[in-house]
Image 1 (cartoon, rainbow, N blue to C red):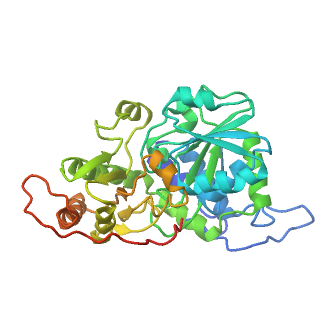
Image 2 (image 1 turned 180 degrees about the vertical axis):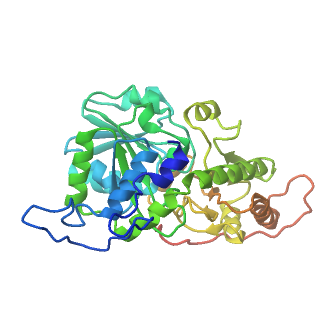
Image 3 (image 1 turned 60 degrees about the vertical axis):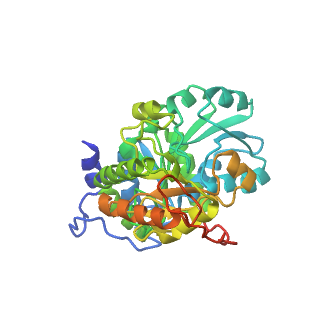
Length: 408
């Protein structure tokens, strides 16, 4: 079956008791047994739940995987995957990664004797040099967050050994645009909160694999660590996943239009989007991905105060954490999603104070561009970005003193 058909039908059989077309929310913690150990496949919902099981079948089908284990969040899935490691193990991690992933590796796993090296994974030689005998995992995020670098999954998989796992975070691309397992990955991870759920109303995560032993270990870790997805969240994420194909086509179409518009502005210094020929890995993106996704990162000309003011002035792009919903969002990575990374480390990765990340929704592209245009025009001369044709304007936007602590 094609992707869109699998999204709607995989794991979504009619309820055997009532004939309900949509999988019900099985809001139960426990299940009555006919005798000790004699039940219908479910005994306690931390171990398994019919609504969650249906979602796992659905998501496995989308990644063309044999197995899926759902978790309470993307970081819950990451923690369980990290649980496959032992003290003394080492992980090579893509250096441009989500701030929560960085926090997990540097502030939690290191305390348990699991070391990590962050490296630019667009450089295969740098990755090769970072691998040591204790390396048990390569942790890849592609496209990266928020710099949208493309990592060659097949090239990274070629560096793996029999006891070295390749993990790919496929949240940005989704299985609609990228298939990491087919390129050699052992485990694919998703924050299902983002595009898979798609409506900013549920939090969840998932890990997919074709390896039965890995899947069994992840199920054991889910049961033991307890970061399991509730049936309510499973229901919402399953509902969202059914329209993933339609939404991703619209996200990409709008993101390409927004990226093109921004690239033509002389008060924008850089636009990062894999679908633009100006992207340094444009050809790799075309080879590895069937689409460019819905995330655009942009660097404005002028001081950080302009970026902060711009983020406040958009009307359709809501200033918020997260991404991947039907509504458009704008984010300041340095002060929001990646605020847990030290400033000097952020800047080394290119996450400067003038960088903004746009999660382009499925509204009218014309309206989204008009919103960005008015915010750019409103902050242009006020920030001292005087370019050809601008009238002189000495006023400047005061620098914001504090944007609060990062929340995600």
